[in-house]
Amino acid sequence: MPVRLHIHNMDIKIDISHFPPERRKTLETITRYSMFETMFYRTSLWLHSHRVSWLVEELIPVAKKHFKTFNPRKSIAIALVHDDAEIVTGDYQAGHKAIMSKAQLAKIKKEETSAIRELLKRYPAEVEEFVYSDLLYDAMEWRSLEAQVVVYADKLDAYCESIHEVLGGNISFIRAVIFYNKMLANFEKKYPKLQLLLKDQDSPLTNLDKCLNPMKIKISNYKVFNKPHTKQSIKALTEFPFYNIWRKITIQRFGNEGLKVLIEQKEFLSKIFNK
Image 1 (cartoon, rainbow, N blue to C red):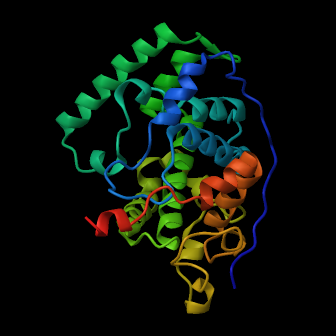
Image 2: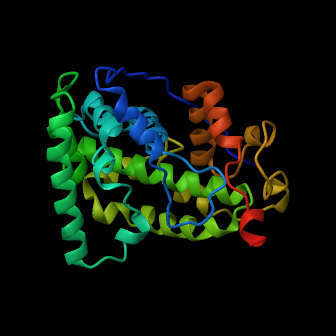
């Protein structure tokens, strides 16, 4: 049976309303997954950064349980601005970065550093009690514990976006599902500080292996999928509790707009197949 879920409502407020409207408008125009010709429910960096912050909120009880020095507000602040450098550089694809040489990755890091310097000229120096530049550099290096929780939430959001596409009938996103499954399986090696969080048994967003290796898979659990998502199908629990909570968070925190994000198809295969 699909696993039921629970949601924490931490709702930690980090106010970035003092940033100029241009920032939001730009993030809304930068779409994700440019390497995929068609994405039915293509998202923007604006939605992505907020959804990462909501996932971080869900992970806060787990992080606080295992890490005494963990700062929840810092982690959410990093989440909200973690992709700001791409306002200048454009979206960097994780799939592309995974096959780049050290020289190519070094070039990207140089571009990100230059982008941060540009952003510091445009935007306020502070985000609540945090220094904006500190948050941006932490998001680039992923060194602090708070930033590493953010990068986990970042990849988890991408994983769920990919699953959402496949369940909605976009089979081309099976590549992204495989990519992020492998990335998250190796996450502990890359970020050993997060070992206790990643192995935690209590949250549906951690210890993903517990639901990815069932004894038996029933086709009846997938009967409402492999077709465009609807208001009805989006409520159907799946065998992936982390994906279930990802959908619920999107609707709960983004309201009617969140529901539209999940079920309003923006791109179609017919445009490709009829060429």
